[in-house]
Length: 117
Length: 117
DNA sequence: ACATTATGCAACTAAATGGTTGCATGTCAA
DNA sequence: TTGACATGCAACCATTTAGTTGCATAATGT
Image (tube, rainbow over all chains, first blue to last red; front, side):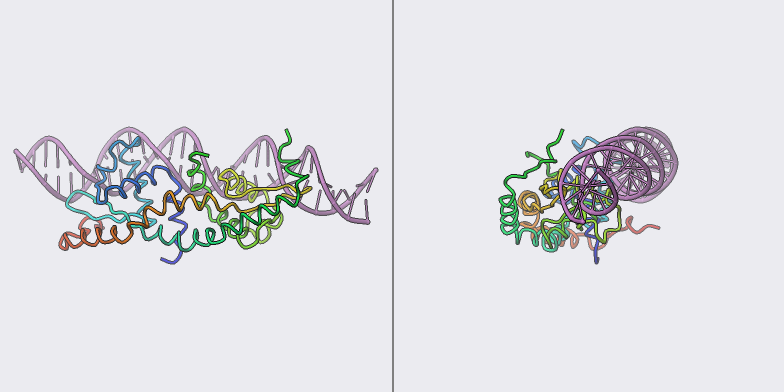
Protein backbone atom coordinates (compact mmCIF):
# COMPACT_ATOMS: atom_id res chain seq x y z
CA UNK A 1 0.00 0.00 0.00
CA UNK A 2 2.99 2.27 0.29
CA UNK A 3 4.40 2.59 -3.23
CA UNK A 4 2.71 0.43 -5.82
CA UNK A 5 2.57 3.55 -7.91
CA UNK A 6 4.95 1.69 -10.15
CA UNK A 7 2.49 -1.12 -10.70
CA UNK A 8 -0.20 1.41 -11.50
CA UNK A 9 1.89 3.27 -14.07
CA UNK A 10 2.97 -0.01 -15.61
CA UNK A 11 -0.61 -1.18 -15.79
CA UNK A 12 -1.66 2.02 -17.51
CA UNK A 13 1.08 1.70 -20.09
CA UNK A 14 -0.74 -0.81 -22.28
CA UNK A 15 -3.54 0.19 -24.68
CA UNK A 16 -5.44 -3.05 -24.12
CA UNK A 17 -5.45 -2.50 -20.40
CA UNK A 18 -6.61 1.08 -20.80
CA UNK A 19 -9.32 -0.23 -23.08
CA UNK A 20 -10.41 -2.63 -20.36
CA UNK A 21 -10.56 0.16 -17.82
CA UNK A 22 -12.55 2.23 -20.28
CA UNK A 23 -15.01 -0.61 -20.70
CA UNK A 24 -15.43 -1.05 -16.99
CA UNK A 25 -15.83 2.66 -16.70
CA UNK A 26 -18.61 2.51 -19.27
CA UNK A 27 -20.22 -0.49 -17.62
CA UNK A 28 -19.02 -1.68 -14.26
CA UNK A 29 -19.24 -5.27 -13.02
CA UNK A 30 -18.63 -7.14 -16.26
CA UNK A 31 -17.57 -10.77 -16.43
CA UNK A 32 -14.40 -11.99 -18.14
CA UNK A 33 -16.50 -13.15 -21.06
CA UNK A 34 -18.09 -9.73 -21.38
CA UNK A 35 -14.70 -8.05 -21.38
CA UNK A 36 -13.38 -10.39 -24.03
CA UNK A 37 -16.04 -9.50 -26.54
CA UNK A 38 -14.82 -7.64 -29.58
CA UNK A 39 -11.31 -7.73 -28.16
CA UNK A 40 -8.69 -8.61 -30.72
CA UNK A 41 -6.75 -10.92 -28.43
CA UNK A 42 -7.54 -14.27 -26.87
CA UNK A 43 -9.35 -14.80 -23.59
CA UNK A 44 -6.08 -15.78 -21.92
CA UNK A 45 -4.51 -12.63 -23.20
CA UNK A 46 -7.25 -10.63 -21.58
CA UNK A 47 -6.89 -12.67 -18.40
CA UNK A 48 -3.24 -11.73 -18.18
CA UNK A 49 -3.96 -8.05 -18.65
CA UNK A 50 -6.61 -8.21 -15.97
CA UNK A 51 -4.17 -9.88 -13.62
CA UNK A 52 -1.92 -6.83 -13.94
CA UNK A 53 -4.82 -4.49 -13.39
CA UNK A 54 -5.71 -6.43 -10.26
CA UNK A 55 -2.11 -6.36 -9.08
CA UNK A 56 -2.15 -2.60 -9.50
CA UNK A 57 -5.41 -2.53 -7.59
CA UNK A 58 -7.09 -0.77 -10.47
CA UNK A 59 -9.65 -3.54 -10.76
CA UNK A 60 -11.25 -5.55 -7.99
CA UNK A 61 -13.06 -8.82 -8.61
CA UNK A 62 -15.91 -10.65 -7.07
CA UNK A 63 -16.85 -14.24 -7.70
CA UNK A 64 -20.44 -15.08 -8.25
CA UNK A 65 -20.73 -18.78 -8.93
CA UNK A 66 -18.59 -19.50 -11.92
CA UNK A 67 -18.57 -15.91 -13.06
CA UNK A 68 -15.88 -13.41 -12.22
CA UNK A 69 -17.24 -9.93 -11.92
CA UNK A 70 -14.85 -7.02 -12.46
CA UNK A 71 -15.13 -3.62 -10.89
CA UNK A 72 -13.13 -0.52 -11.54
CA UNK A 73 -11.27 0.92 -8.60
CA UNK A 74 -10.59 4.58 -9.29
CA UNK A 75 -8.57 5.16 -6.13
CA UNK A 76 -5.09 4.50 -7.55
CA UNK A 77 -5.79 6.86 -10.41
CA UNK A 78 -6.91 9.45 -7.95
CA UNK A 79 -3.61 8.91 -6.14
CA UNK A 80 -1.62 9.37 -9.32
CA UNK A 81 -3.34 12.61 -9.80
CA UNK A 82 -2.71 13.80 -6.29
CA UNK A 83 0.82 12.56 -5.87
CA UNK A 84 2.24 13.03 -9.29
CA UNK A 85 0.24 14.91 -11.82
CA UNK A 86 -0.90 17.66 -9.53
CA UNK A 87 2.57 18.90 -8.88
CA UNK A 88 3.36 19.25 -12.56
CA UNK A 89 0.13 20.99 -13.39
CA UNK A 90 0.58 23.34 -10.52
CA UNK A 91 3.55 24.95 -12.21
CA UNK A 92 2.42 24.42 -15.73
CA UNK A 93 2.30 28.05 -16.62
CA UNK A 94 5.50 28.86 -14.82
CA UNK A 95 7.38 26.04 -16.51
CA UNK A 96 6.23 27.10 -19.94
CA UNK A 97 7.28 30.61 -19.16
CA UNK A 98 10.72 29.45 -18.09
CA UNK A 99 11.08 27.56 -21.34
CA UNK A 100 9.92 30.49 -23.37
CA UNK A 101 12.38 32.77 -21.69
CA UNK A 102 15.18 30.29 -22.18
CA UNK A 103 14.38 29.99 -25.85
CA UNK A 104 14.43 33.74 -26.23
CA UNK A 105 17.85 33.94 -24.66
CA UNK A 106 19.49 32.09 -27.55
CA UNK A 107 17.67 33.14 -30.66
CA UNK A 108 20.81 32.58 -32.77
CA UNK A 109 21.98 29.16 -31.70
CA UNK A 110 18.86 27.06 -32.11
CA UNK A 111 19.33 23.32 -32.72
CA UNK A 112 22.60 23.60 -34.62
CA UNK A 113 23.36 19.99 -33.82
CA UNK A 114 19.84 18.73 -33.44
CA UNK A 115 19.22 19.06 -37.15
CA UNK A 116 22.42 17.70 -38.54
CA UNK A 117 22.04 15.14 -41.26
CA UNK B 1 0.05 15.02 -32.39
CA UNK B 2 -3.22 13.18 -32.50
CA UNK B 3 -2.78 10.22 -30.22
CA UNK B 4 0.68 9.81 -28.77
CA UNK B 5 -1.04 9.30 -25.47
CA UNK B 6 0.37 5.82 -25.76
CA UNK B 7 3.91 7.14 -25.92
CA UNK B 8 3.24 9.28 -22.89
CA UNK B 9 1.85 6.43 -20.82
CA UNK B 10 4.72 4.22 -21.88
CA UNK B 11 7.21 6.90 -20.97
CA UNK B 12 5.68 7.30 -17.55
CA UNK B 13 5.82 3.57 -16.90
CA UNK B 14 9.49 3.53 -15.94
CA UNK B 15 10.75 4.65 -12.52
CA UNK B 16 13.99 6.03 -13.96
CA UNK B 17 12.08 8.18 -16.40
CA UNK B 18 9.77 9.44 -13.68
CA UNK B 19 12.85 10.23 -11.64
CA UNK B 20 14.22 12.27 -14.53
CA UNK B 21 10.97 14.19 -14.81
CA UNK B 22 11.06 14.77 -11.08
CA UNK B 23 14.57 16.15 -11.36
CA UNK B 24 13.63 18.48 -14.17
CA UNK B 25 10.63 19.51 -12.18
CA UNK B 26 12.90 20.36 -9.29
CA UNK B 27 15.40 22.14 -11.49
CA UNK B 28 14.54 22.85 -15.10
CA UNK B 29 17.10 23.17 -17.89
CA UNK B 30 19.68 20.63 -16.77
CA UNK B 31 22.30 19.11 -19.05
CA UNK B 32 22.67 15.40 -19.72
CA UNK B 33 25.62 15.34 -17.37
CA UNK B 34 23.58 16.96 -14.63
CA UNK B 35 20.82 14.42 -15.06
CA UNK B 36 23.26 11.52 -14.90
CA UNK B 37 24.58 12.49 -11.50
CA UNK B 38 23.76 10.07 -8.72
CA UNK B 39 21.83 7.96 -11.19
CA UNK B 40 22.46 4.25 -10.83
CA UNK B 41 22.68 3.58 -14.55
CA UNK B 42 25.17 4.58 -17.23
CA UNK B 43 25.05 7.80 -19.21
CA UNK B 44 23.87 5.92 -22.29
CA UNK B 45 21.14 4.36 -20.23
CA UNK B 46 19.98 7.82 -19.25
CA UNK B 47 20.27 8.97 -22.85
CA UNK B 48 17.93 6.22 -23.96
CA UNK B 49 15.38 7.11 -21.32
CA UNK B 50 15.53 10.72 -22.33
CA UNK B 51 14.99 9.75 -25.95
CA UNK B 52 11.69 8.18 -24.93
CA UNK B 53 10.72 11.22 -22.90
CA UNK B 54 11.46 13.38 -25.93
CA UNK B 55 9.46 11.08 -28.19
CA UNK B 56 6.55 11.43 -25.80
CA UNK B 57 7.06 15.17 -25.87
CA UNK B 58 7.46 15.23 -22.12
CA UNK B 59 10.88 16.78 -22.41
CA UNK B 60 12.10 19.33 -24.91
CA UNK B 61 15.74 19.96 -25.63
CA UNK B 62 17.83 22.91 -26.54
CA UNK B 63 21.41 22.83 -27.67
CA UNK B 64 23.79 25.34 -26.30
CA UNK B 65 27.22 24.71 -27.70
CA UNK B 66 28.09 21.16 -26.80
CA UNK B 67 25.61 21.06 -23.96
CA UNK B 68 22.14 19.66 -24.27
CA UNK B 69 19.69 21.45 -22.04
CA UNK B 70 16.54 19.61 -21.00
CA UNK B 71 13.24 21.21 -20.18
CA UNK B 72 10.12 19.63 -18.79
CA UNK B 73 7.03 19.95 -20.93
CA UNK B 74 4.01 19.55 -18.67
CA UNK B 75 1.45 19.69 -21.48
CA UNK B 76 1.13 15.95 -22.17
CA UNK B 77 0.62 15.31 -18.48
CA UNK B 78 -2.04 17.95 -18.45
CA UNK B 79 -3.66 16.14 -21.37
CA UNK B 80 -3.59 12.82 -19.58
CA UNK B 81 -5.35 14.45 -16.75
CA UNK B 82 -7.99 16.02 -18.92
CA UNK B 83 -8.58 13.17 -21.31
CA UNK B 84 -8.21 10.20 -19.09
CA UNK B 85 -7.93 10.74 -15.40
CA UNK B 86 -10.64 13.31 -15.12
CA UNK B 87 -13.35 10.99 -16.27
CA UNK B 88 -12.47 8.38 -13.70
CA UNK B 89 -12.25 10.84 -10.86
CA UNK B 90 -15.53 12.37 -11.84
CA UNK B 91 -17.40 9.22 -10.88
CA UNK B 92 -15.08 8.16 -8.13
CA UNK B 93 -17.69 8.29 -5.42
CA UNK B 94 -20.37 6.78 -7.57
CA UNK B 95 -18.17 3.90 -8.61
CA UNK B 96 -17.20 3.11 -5.05
CA UNK B 97 -20.82 3.20 -4.12
CA UNK B 98 -21.69 0.79 -6.90
CA UNK B 99 -19.02 -1.56 -5.67
CA UNK B 100 -20.15 -1.29 -2.11
CA UNK B 101 -23.69 -2.06 -3.08
CA UNK B 102 -22.59 -4.99 -5.19
CA UNK B 103 -20.57 -6.39 -2.33
CA UNK B 104 -23.52 -6.12 -0.01
CA UNK B 105 -25.69 -8.05 -2.40
CA UNK B 106 -23.69 -11.25 -1.92
CA UNK B 107 -22.60 -11.27 1.69
CA UNK B 108 -22.56 -15.11 1.69
CA UNK B 109 -20.67 -15.99 -1.45
CA UNK B 110 -17.52 -13.91 -1.16
CA UNK B 111 -14.38 -15.20 -2.86
CA UNK B 112 -15.26 -18.89 -2.58
CA UNK B 113 -12.93 -19.61 -5.45
CA UNK B 114 -10.59 -16.73 -5.00
CA UNK B 115 -9.17 -18.22 -1.84
CA UNK B 116 -8.79 -21.78 -2.85
CA UNK B 117 -5.41 -23.24 -2.06
C1' DA C 1 47.20 22.63 -31.73
C1' DC C 2 45.81 19.65 -28.31
C1' DA C 3 43.72 17.48 -24.48
C1' DT C 4 39.42 17.49 -22.28
C1' DT C 5 34.64 17.58 -22.06
C1' DA C 6 29.78 16.61 -23.58
C1' DT C 7 27.50 14.08 -26.21
C1' DG C 8 25.91 10.58 -30.11
C1' DC C 9 25.67 6.11 -32.49
C1' DA C 10 25.86 1.03 -33.01
C1' DA C 11 26.11 -3.61 -31.56
C1' DC C 12 25.15 -6.69 -28.28
C1' DT C 13 22.85 -9.20 -24.15
C1' DA C 14 19.53 -10.30 -20.59
C1' DA C 15 15.18 -9.87 -18.95
C1' DA C 16 10.48 -8.49 -19.22
C1' DT C 17 6.32 -8.39 -21.96
C1' DG C 18 2.47 -9.78 -24.74
C1' DG C 19 0.74 -13.17 -27.00
C1' DT C 20 -0.45 -18.03 -28.10
C1' DT C 21 -2.14 -23.08 -27.35
C1' DG C 22 -3.53 -27.11 -24.59
C1' DC C 23 -5.48 -28.96 -20.79
C1' DA C 24 -7.63 -28.84 -16.03
C1' DT C 25 -11.24 -27.47 -12.84
C1' DG C 26 -15.42 -25.83 -10.77
C1' DT C 27 -20.42 -24.60 -11.67
C1' DC C 28 -24.82 -24.63 -13.87
C1' DA C 29 -28.82 -26.63 -16.19
C1' DA C 30 -31.32 -30.49 -18.20
C1' DT D 1 -25.20 -37.55 -14.03
C1' DT D 2 -23.72 -35.53 -17.78
C1' DG D 3 -22.57 -31.95 -21.02
C1' DA D 4 -21.79 -27.25 -21.70
C1' DC D 5 -19.95 -23.08 -19.88
C1' DA D 6 -16.73 -19.77 -17.39
C1' DT D 7 -12.61 -19.63 -15.93
C1' DG D 8 -7.61 -20.95 -14.31
C1' DC D 9 -2.92 -22.70 -14.92
C1' DA D 10 1.40 -23.83 -17.37
C1' DA D 11 4.47 -24.07 -21.10
C1' DC D 12 6.10 -21.94 -24.77
C1' DC D 13 7.48 -18.28 -28.33
C1' DA D 14 8.44 -13.64 -30.39
C1' DT D 15 9.18 -8.99 -29.60
C1' DT D 16 10.34 -5.19 -26.94
C1' DT D 17 12.89 -3.13 -23.40
C1' DA D 18 16.60 -1.77 -20.38
C1' DG D 19 20.95 -2.01 -19.87
C1' DT D 20 25.83 -2.48 -21.18
C1' DT D 21 30.44 -1.47 -23.77
C1' DG D 22 33.25 0.62 -27.36
C1' DC D 23 34.19 4.02 -30.45
C1' DA D 24 33.13 8.52 -32.99
C1' DT D 25 32.34 13.49 -33.19
C1' DA D 26 31.88 18.27 -32.00
C1' DA D 27 32.84 22.18 -28.82
C1' DT D 28 35.80 24.20 -25.25
C1' DG D 29 39.86 25.99 -22.78
C1' DT D 30 44.79 26.45 -22.48
